[in-house]
Image (cartoon, rainbow, N blue to C red; front, side, top):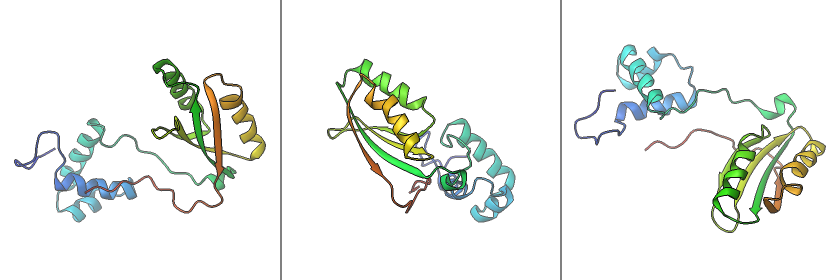
Length: 162
């Protein structure tokens, strides 16, 4: 990746940022199209994308699937309160939530709640089974609160790149 001499080491220059804005919207955008948009050669764009991936600025390339299209009708936002905040308890909870496929997102947070989870299931019966296993029968969990999404108003993965 070619850096602007005024940029601190490890920072992203304006070309990198422009490329990231494009590939966040659609990572299948042809490199020649990206090159034309950012005024670089396709080869330079290819090198920069490879470098962004190597530096893990681009963490993954994935397809975003509409849950309704695959019969996942329930999206739940769950606040989880752990019994205590000791490192072992938190680490065990993180491991459990990360290995559970229905947990789409997991945030360890401040503010009186230990975790906020985004969970997607096929129906309320599947959600109930999951809550029994993850929360009700889990000695790490003190209590939990569920919010069921009525409508998926915005679900985006792109971040604002200044």
